[in-house]
Image (tube, rainbow, N blue to C red):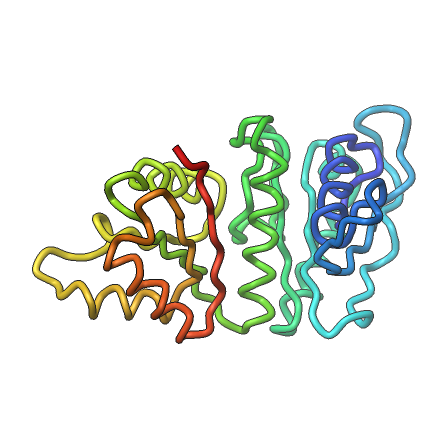
Length: 246
């Protein structure tokens, strides 16, 4: 996590990343993901936005793979970090083991030429209520694609009973679209007219994470049972979303 020391939002997001990716220091009994998170920041200049010396160069030799999350705001862009950012771009672009993820925190930021051709996460477009979730979701998805050496997006198959699970499936699909860059497979939207259902569903299950929306009628539906059995045979990730009994 790289940010200017004068940025309170940058400091907050770095803490959020540490909490969700590594461990929550205030809840030691709760197991985290255990992903090492390192902080790279500077001593803040009390005059906002202030110029100061950037931190030392990021040490990419500490791990076999690295994702450098660069938090870009007015503090960083006005603090004399242009050369530092250019070096980060050069360091992370020379090897497939490293990845730079620039995150724009404010709208009025003049992007340096070094990241002008990099697709940045525009976090300022997200509401404050969802900001932290979107931030973590984007990092987690990038981590997944980075460690699997597969640059294609993750897809989640939404298995549900249409009688009482359709509304929940649509709500989950909306969340995936608005708060993540994860793809989804929902039969009514993802299967073309005239396509054979079994072949399309089985093909999607083999290439997706499986989310079972367990409602009252879920286990009584033949298609739902088929999807669960197929997902178990594929040995892929399976998540159960259990809905309260009515």
